[in-house]
Image 1: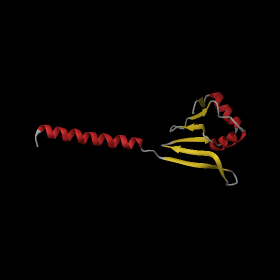
Image 2: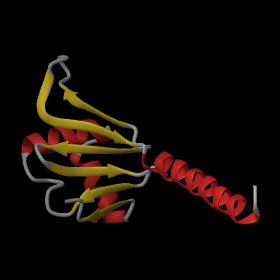
Image 3: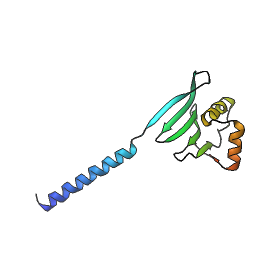
Image 4: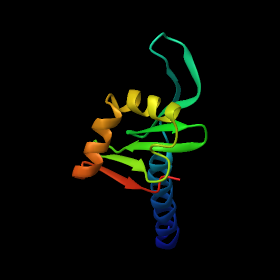
Length: 116
């Protein structure tokens, strides 16, 4: 095989390897579960979502909480305390009370941001 053909073949092999790496990067591990009440009932429109090591609490179509891979907690600045029902399941998702959440916002442990 001449040098030009060998170089072309090498470039093609490199492109294939690069495409394989890109494909791996875009594979997503997504898991969506409805929240479950303390009585064991599935709660419609309240979701615990896991995406590539991050967790989200979503109420209807609004993301309320994001927990990143390092465990940092982000709350949607507009919707984190939208309604009593949202708050109930946000508390369940975070494993704490509204007072705990407010205190963590105040100390900066939780960050308010735009999640939507």
